[in-house]
Image (tube, rainbow, N blue to C red; front, side, top):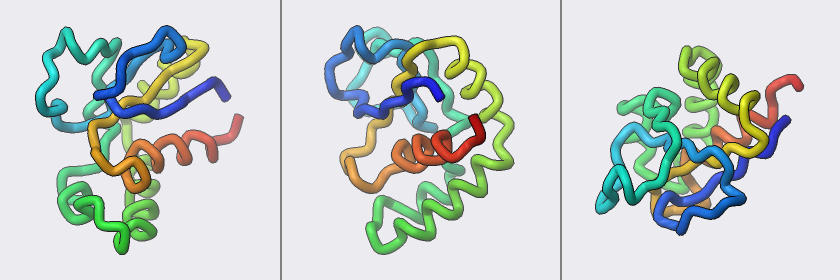
Length: 118
């Protein structure tokens, strides 16, 4: 698989980021469209509103959240679009706005992509 790192959108953009894709359903607070320096915004790849609100970055719900989001991704039509972008770029960085760097959907999405057949 291609290189698919994750990064907080508030960190400075770097050339090594390659193609930058925002994977949040909501626009990050305090950022302008120009300041975000993204190449694409794939809001539909993010967890459903219901799942996001239920999880609320609660570490005790992490295992269940991962399972539920994996299920959503399996049936998500936006996945095809993301996989096409990955195929078209050597590096594609998945950007997220969550403060919590240990328990967020970008980690789950990255792991999901790693489990796909090559």
